[in-house]
Each structure stands twice: as C-alpha cells, then as structure tokens.
Amino acid sequence: MNEILPDEIYSLLMNRYSCRSYQERDIPQDVLEQLLQIAIHSASGGNLQPFSIIVVHDPARRRVLADACGQAFVGQAPVDLVFLLDWHKLSLYTEAADAPFVCSASLDHNLTACEEIACAIARLETAAQFCGLGCCLIGNILGRRAEVADTLALPDQTYPLLLLTLGYPKDAGIIRNKLPYSAMVFEERYDSRSDEELVAGFAQKYQGMNYSLPAQEPQRSQQLNEIRSALLTTYDERRTAAMMEKINATGCLSEIQRRFALHYPAHRSADQSEAMRADLRSAGIFF
Image (cartoon, rainbow, N blue to C red; front, top):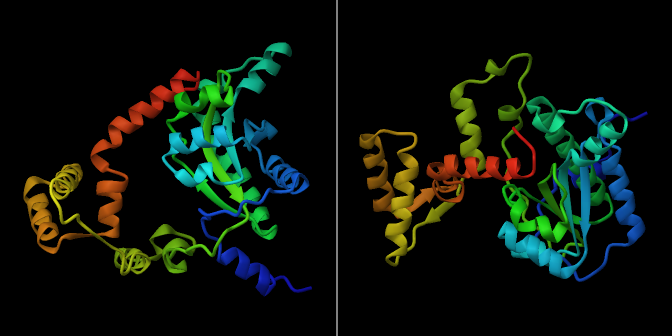
C-alpha cells in the first residue's frame, strides 16, 4: 500500500489559497451539511464541544457581517459560517444536571475551546477544497460581538471567534508564499536552526513585497506619523529617527514594516486588546 499522498491530493492541499471572489451559485444543501458534520466531528478536549456554527445565507445578515469585519466580499459570498465560542449550551445542561460549571471564567477551558474551533474550521476548509469550494478565514470578527449580536441573536456566554466565507470560486486566487520548511520544522529541539537562517526564511517569504507611501499630503504625513508611533513601541528615539529618515528618503516600507506599522499597528495594540477583553466580558466570558 502506498503511504504517500497521491500527487493530486498533495497538489490540491499545497495550493490552498484564500478565496475572496465567488460565483453567484448556491452550495447544495447536502454538500453544506456534510461539511458541517465533518467540523462537528473534529477533536474535542473531554468531548465538551464548546462551539457552535451559525450558517448565514440571508443577504442582509451577510452585509451586517461584512460591515462589522470591514471586508466587502464577506457580504458577497453565498454562505458565511460564524464559529462561536459557546458556553451557553453547556451551562444550560450542567444546571439541569446539577453539575458545577465555571468554564466561561476558566482560562484553560477558553483556550482549549479556541484550539477546538481551529481544528473544526481547518477540517471543514480542507473538505470544502475537495468539493471544489473556495474559502476565506476572517479573524476580523474578533471584538465585533456588539455589532453582530442582534443580527445573529447571540445569547449570553457566546462569542464569535472566526468567520469562514464559503462558495464556488469566481476566478483563480493568489497563492501566497509561505515560510520554507527549514524555518518551520525543527528536529528534536527549537535551536536546530541559527537566527540567521530563521531571518533568511522570512526574507525569502516577503521578497519583492514593498509598500509605497502616498505621494500626496496630508496622507503621506499621516502615515509617517503612524509609522513613527509604531516604531517607538519597540525602538528608542535615536534608532527610530534613523529608520524614519530611511523610510522618508525611499518612500516605501518593507512588507513586515507595513504589517506592524499600518496593518496591525503596534502602537494601537494595547487599546485593541482591552477593547476585545471588554467585548468578551460583555458576553460573560473571561480570559
């Protein structure tokens, strides 16, 4: 028996991409239900299954999700799947069965639940590929519970962690570079690679990806101020000044500079984290 994956399966899995453009074509209900069953039967710590999946077909509800996530294509996908961290159901059952329940206030239980949702969504996404479907995982639903709670009729102790768009691809997607095997897989110990090799892996991944600053004012100055504030979270004034001089002279950022200065702004991270904790607490969930 051949234990190596057949070439067509290996190729399909290696060419996975995030699909952001969909045909106006419905997903057959039996296909969708089969995919959801695969997610339901994923690994679960203690077999508690502390999650639920909301299937959203309605265009108006999909638009609410798109606005909350800031991603227009979320509203254009035929189906959006919202994966909830869900202690509501288990709290009902434990009370009915006279059992103690503190999961929603337990870091251990909450982190394990997040891991299980990741397992479930990965299995569903992989199965969807075999059905010819495209998917895109949306993390921007985090911190947006207040914006979608009424639309999704969310009860207490539920929290949207991930959203998966689902549909038949309209066109070929972009396959992104990933870190090389040598920078991701370690034999026996983490330090089996040198720091230089690890840095080289990232340089290879982001090679040729640069971001040009706006030429017009005030957009250029606004972005330069954002970049400077982000750099100051990590570097002293002197080194920041040197970096800013280079950025201003070249008029561009490397991809990793763009990501942590503008896309995932380092100087706003603490405020965003606190807002997310407040959003979780509003649902009766405590990390």
